[in-house]
Length: 435
Image (tube, rainbow, N blue to C red; front, side, top):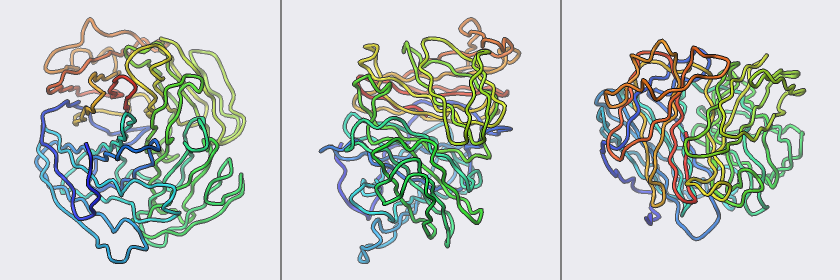
């Protein structure tokens, strides 16, 4: 689908009973993904002739009004005007909104731009942002403003080649925002490895950092404690680095205050292998993976594991952030290409909400991996049906169970008045997304 380059419109695509998960985000360790206000930013995807297809998928528990506000995309373009438009969101459906492709932040556009999208709702909603260019896609659940923080560490992956740089985007939620950056490698904005430097932004301003090296472990901190949003990923990456299938990686980074100590790593359905990175924010962090102990000696350092078709139970002595990656199609000859998704701490969610499954030209299989306590088996349903008989126990924590759910093209409603976790993902030949 080609998108005309216009700043004057957004396009409402559909209210569709596509694929819904029913979940609620109220976390002890983790993030409440429902809220009334959000800032969203898009990264550069694979460099090529294909247009960008940027979209938002918005869901709500009850009928509400959502307003999207866009500033003129380029600071220097004084002739452009700010824009806003409101949409209705209905319970049990997905409101899909197409964003003009100018709101992708690209290298050639310089350091600071007005690329922030502001979303405001009258009632709680959940927002998923998706970025597609050709056969390269990924998606992220957007963190509400009240769940943002002032300190972050960057998570990415190995750089394939210089023309496919690593990247992260900072969005200011307030005027007079001052951010200190400490990158672990030389960045294209002139930043020197491990040397702090500061940038100043106003509300809605965005700042892109790209590098020819992996920037995982770089630290981003607003010096006065103001909330900022950080999106990170890769223009295009192989996962693992020797598997020659390249795809866009895109994820919103959680603030350090929402990291966790206890996780479960569950393989993606139909895939025989997956990759995880475990990043520490404090020195001498112990990581136990099914009883095998690793030590992350320094803050900002990480442990990378390539795992087969097995489930692993992870505990840590200090808070960590964990990212899970799908592998390239050429590794196992199965549907799917690289994507990245943050692993939430155990029992991050409880209650009720709705999550969309999304399609592209290539993605036509949709899955959810869900986890909850065995005692809650009678409470958990999909489309009104129990998963009893289709679950497996979590190693080392037999009181927890997990299940794979293949979603249909129609509505898929998951309900549980209990604590649980999920990962949602779509797989196609040489393309995937996960969030």
